[in-house]
Image 1: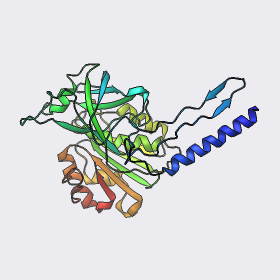
Image 2: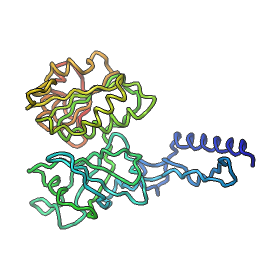
Image 3: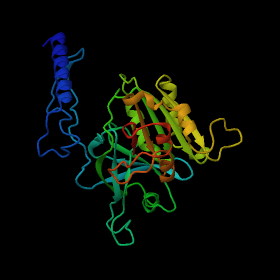
Image 4: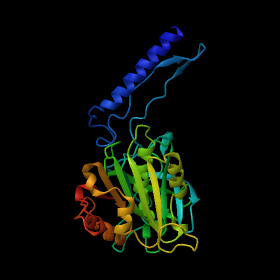
Length: 327
């Protein structure tokens, strides 16, 4: 086979592969994750491409299923722990066979102790909590959680007892908002503390897409400057995408030389930085943070899947329930 013919065949196969993936045919019942990961890849893609020599190279097989399972908990081994600040660390778990999580955006996972005798409530029932990974869904072989230790948080304190080689159990994904590229012209992100992770998931996903035209503005509230999580990542995204992303850090207890806003996120601050409700379905506000903050800005959710009525500062400013999503 000539080089040109081989290259043509390879391009044709690649095009068919992309078209097949885009069509996402209905998955079979035996699929591991029928609702979220079906039709994600190609079976047996065996295109050979000659690259200036006689030795053929086999195209890499597309991963079809996720190692995660929305129906049951699966144990993953802790690979390493990276301290982040005085009360937060990155917990990096190893995914089997170098697989990626393929976690849909936006969604989270339920996490509990792999040891059945550990991490129980007063009634002896296992404690599990939702966490949003900060690793990219396509990150091969790793799943990273950013965990902040709370003295009243049994699950978060348990994380900090783990050592490399220990295991935690994961179940998911738990779908939140099915984000679509360029669905909105403007997106406002309002976060506080460790509630930043689902907002980061959406932002990192959207800005990584070269076709993204949506403009994002993040208002991120913390107690002190040392409490700002993922600051390096946000600053890097702002530098790389200056026309599509901006971030405003708000501190309750700012240092003497602080030049940003201080106190809490108020209606006036939102009005100053976030796109107005007059844009209708062209604007969306995502919010996630401590319950008191969410209550003041949008009103808290009334259940895992219930958004509850829109109240607080956003209601005062004229936004409607279709324009706001609470993680």
